[in-house]
Image (cartoon, rainbow, N blue to C red; front, side):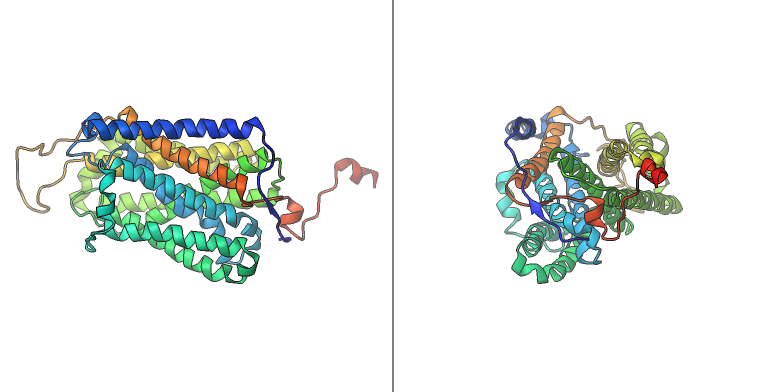
Length: 411
């Protein structure tokens, strides 16, 4: 890879401000939705005493997991020494910080009393994975910020690799912590299994790279910078491998549950007769979010950049469907009062909990995505995160342009 040059987005075109205005509109709507739920109480949402994590949590956890995966490109460059990915490392770090910010904002505003956040940050129960996650999330901001400084300040470039290795280990720990929220939750049959933590790690790779592909292709096109096939093909293939790996881990997760007789109920609920959750699993998560993207990415369809963008969008939607099934479907299934014992109460024993997401919940979640994208757009405008060129000649020093057929015939 030739030495890369970076620059900010130039020009004062209306397109830039229109994009900011659209994103700002979604952010404002998300803020108003949070204010509406805060003022009226959570009874205006679809949540209940059975479903305590609703649609905003689906968006929040998805963004937090994707933030870890967005750093993947930078890790490949710094940790594994792949020079081809080095010009993409700055954008990778920026996107990681922006996605985590969007996810945490949604999470805080969905807690009901965001004014009490200071108590959660000053009184810790270290037997809870939630307490550890506060340190992991805050630490991720600091670690990635230092990592970006090492990359962008020429005098500090010698420390980029150690900073990259530390950021790589931190992001793995962060995603393990997020997955462990569910993996350590013994009360629900859908959770309480060790495979969830590594499954969340590979999910982060796929979601983060899908969002990275969308942002990279859009940014290079809108700023009229060249993106050659060498970089594009590498990222496309990598995305396909990650999606296949997610599908593999999902299969292992369900086979593990099917092996345990006690969990045949939750498996039947998700896979066969769970209504909207079953449809969302097979149609949203598996077919549209995994099978169709794999067909696009590993066939001739993947030569088209528009089709790869479509595949990336489907992976994002499939990821949201997967989070919905995992978070809300897992809560909707009846919870045993005492695991392994017979006990009864008059409080919805054996009843599948009802949940219909409300409009404010959905708007708040979309507002979090808009906030993350707005941060990226503004940052690209004021700081040099984007390389001037990712042409094949710049990406691969051994690249030789294929002569046109007419030139070959004339020779």
